[in-house]
Length: 239
Image 1 (cartoon, rainbow, N blue to C red):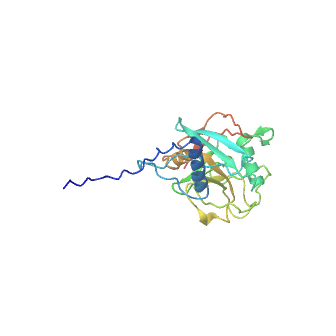
Image 2 (cartoon, rainbow, N blue to C red; image 1 turned 90 degrees about the vertical axis):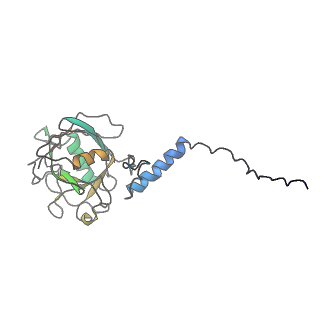
Image 3 (spheres, rainbow, N blue to C red; image 1 turned 120 degrees about the horizontal axis):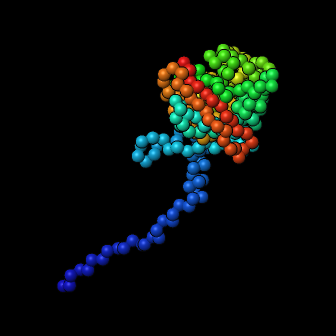
């Protein structure tokens, strides 16, 4: 009796998977950026060594953007790019913008954030600065010649990297601001959110962990902006 012939079923050959196009990758990046902009987190890198570094999308391409290059102790640490939410809080955004660019003048002399300090830094909470009047958190100034009212509370402290107005109570906004280092929803309805870091969140993280008295955190020369506005300050950390 002849031996039985074993047959092996050969699975149908599938064509090799198509390489993912740059366009598809870009769309995936945009989806992830939107997720983070809504309060989500970046996925971890494959090695688990840290968060994947990506820029958060600008909410409105017509909003003004300011740039500043930062160094700590004389060493450059990178650039932060900030979108100002002029579409939601135009009065608050314009106050900040003019103090960045030096457009606002007192007795013919430009005044603003150039040379001011981060006088309050709390890790995992916020970094606060902008008091170019007294440098200690007590100064008040605005392009409106005094404290101005809370414009609205439409935007929330829902993620790190948001810029919000510091105040001493309702409708006492001036020149001081803070940048959130984490979600701070207990501040909603009390402080006006007016901008966000759209690129350079790692620079904020480096400022957040700086220790020691009066370590200089310097913002260097002006940079070219393809958007309407740019910023140049020199900022020093004090405690």
